[in-house]
Length: 411
Ligand SMILES: [Zn+2]
Image 1 (cartoon, rainbow, N blue to C red):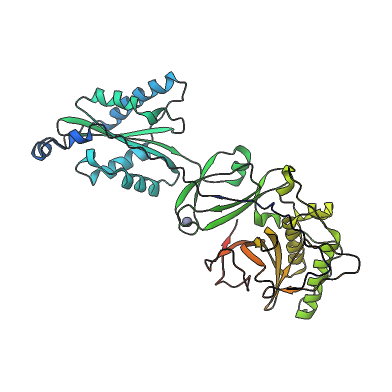
Image 2 (image 1 turned 30 degrees about the vertical axis):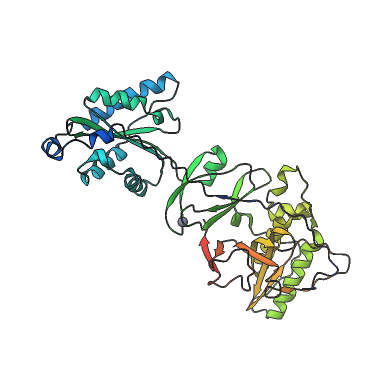
């Protein structure tokens, strides 16, 4: 690995902070009042009276809402409303259960979240009381009804022996993730994992500047977002906008691999010569932001991801396949670099080298640099690629092999 003689390799590049969002914001609440006593009721007595449930479910829910909202109003919380979709789903769920007082809430949550992926905040309780009025006052005392994160209350009333019972569920549905809305208003959203299709809640950490979103269920990453210098988040791909370096060499159709290699080398050297490496200065908040290739060229300076974006975009523009790699370098730590392919040959293109006058570094093949460069995600203009070989912190001898990388198309 003696290929770096003559250039300076900068060593303090820890700017690429990857925040993995694995928080699943599901709140599960149980509150079985009197369940133990309810279970002592004889089965014969049950079977005689069960089924004579209160007839007007909607009237029961309205009464429940007014009891609960009176308590919320006391502390200045907005009123909960009913959710007919959840209400109907409770009814369907109850059909499969003869003893509502003893239902397991976990399958109910699973059923609801499967049907309504936006329902990411859920809390449920089962209450029993000889009188319906007793149920409403117990509901109003339920701790979770004064949790400001919930927006709807749905109920299912039932009979359990000589008692009345109700299943009550608090829900907040989140909007589906939309990058524009997240940039505009922030807040919580739900997203479906493109690998396993499970839905989960996400919130963009506005303090972070590179976000690698991963699924809390299958743990696979599925999106790379980065903040621009104004703090606005974009998909990694969207930073590749078709930039061309001035006076770029042209590559006529049918050029030989040798001619392409020559152009590849020229574009790489041009980026190295034109752009100074920008050190990360502690306390400089915007230093981790990603710059658009045109901005990096204009500034004639950038850090590892800025210049890798610039080089990959410039290579695309002359007709050479290139990707930006985000991952780990054994000398540097978190790092970004560019890779390019011509025919069956692939090269690592380091963009943080400082060249002295007259220097022209040689191309380094991916195989030669495999131990040193350990890619975790790749992207080009169209897709994000995640390691499909299950390896972490490992070198890679082929940045295009479908067996190593699974691609996710980005809008
Ligand atoms: Zn998943």
